[in-house]
Length: 272
Image (cartoon, rainbow, N blue to C red; front, side, top):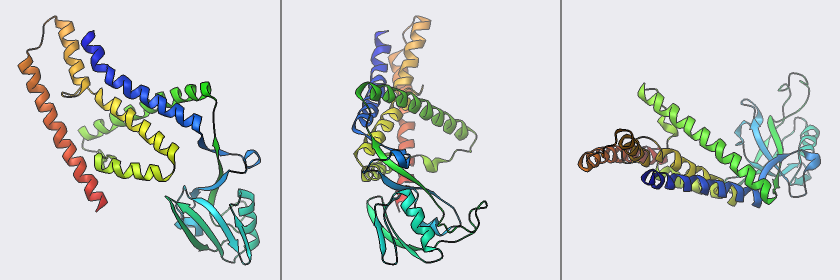
């Protein structure tokens, strides 16, 4: 029991650390979609989706709309109603949309079109789904509870995703383009940081949960593999010879290193 306790201690700390980060994020404040009538003055307008064949198809979802301009009228920091009203007013004339994405601000000209809404074919739109996003802070105990829920949901999602990846890999159907190693994770950290401190905290929590789940895999050289040895010794009442345990762990470690090299190579190819 003592060996097993030591082996799961690291995994437990990964989970507790993720819980702490999720809870801290909720206390600091999380960007949350809110109804326009309930939005505060600090709420901002975000593009949550775009229609494929619409004028807005060139806009990246997740962009924050900082301004919209038509002729001599310019609205800085518009809400959803102001944006829609200006698009309707412009009709088939071009409007200038300024948005921020990944720290970069860009202005583009967009011309509204008709026929994109089946129920209202005469309405001029650009084809965006919009949402007012506000920073919502939660009280201490609520944040702790929600952090615990996010931790459990994250564990289930990661374990399920990893199980499906391994299952698909065994039959040669796995998509490894979504797998990232150290190089890929560094790039993701930079992307997360560009969206704000709370996004970076959330990403760090997800990394911690990934480490917890992967470390529990019953594979040699991982804590999960060593835990299997302890369970076998408990059931049989005999100690596994150290030299055999060492050999199995060495093989497992070699396989992990080869996998790490392959994943890192894939990361570098994606960057190039």
